[in-house]
Length: 498
Image (cartoon, rainbow, N blue to C red; front, side, top):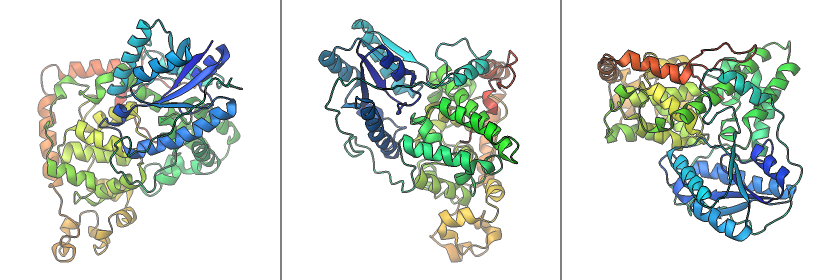
């Protein structure tokens, strides 16, 4: 039997349950569809495509080594699949379940309808601990633990069935805007394995203590997030590699705590994606209905542009945004601060600021991203809003100003004690002039506005009852997990740093 294996956010051959299942049943036609409409969505960017394109080149080589190269086609998924079926007469489609954005979910519904009309089976398999149409949060951690413990899926060889693999298009041909990202992580499994091996060999030792600082997180974090987001590595193989390292490093000072923390973060990652699977409209509607529309639907254009460019006049905010633009990555605390400042201090609608950050992240994972955007914008309704003071945050995580001075060189003449709030420096106007802007808002005044608006919504009748319902649906802990398995944590507790 010939099966078409549809690759999406699973760009690997190792531990690929869909490929393994299809190969065990007969010949395989491996296909990746480049969908121009997907790349025209507001959360897509050229830096993400560049990462995917590099991953596709490597995936094609890996599949060729197994006997059948990857088939690349450009177009709308149903049209491409219909043409391929007319040519190759495959008997079924096999793929992984994808928790993507709203567009990809709508596309999958169109493919499912076409497959039913064509009397063509479409088998979708999980590739992580995320469940589709599962029994809910009760016992979720134990079920995920069982999935993670399963042997990795292997494929020995593929039978050659087709040639004419197709070319990988450029970002320009996909009409993606120029997106310079000089320090972006390279795509592909080989680069992902290098990151994993260096993390388990040396970098991971300082992970637990250094992941929060803008100065140390770049090296201390695993940097596996883009490889997990686009599936160059599987979450299961990474979890098993970390589990093996825990045994190897047993008794070695510092390693145990760091590896346990990272292992927990892998679980939080699946939990975050599960939230979008359970509530697909999370990228477009506030989780708590009373908080829908609390921000102006038309954001202030001046504030938004300043925030996007890293020119808000708030040095640590600007340094983090410029760093993100140049690298495509940022650690969790700094991501949270950028979103918090946009939603509270600048009072921008979370969907607009969230889409911009999505485009900046090479490791954009919809399930992780939109959960965090809502939590850091105060619209999820779970727990009290967490207002992050950008000045205090900078003083805490960049006390010597080294990060700011690297990424905001305009502030070089500012003395250290004024660096985090240069508008308080008596000589600011004289020596900075137009080199660096004054803050686009008074941070304290902006925060007062946000607090008042959110408080008014949170005091509405029924708010607490709805909040309790949301917590129960998205993070209840109704059953005790087995030894060693963490319960599914409440969304309000979700903290993720990979």
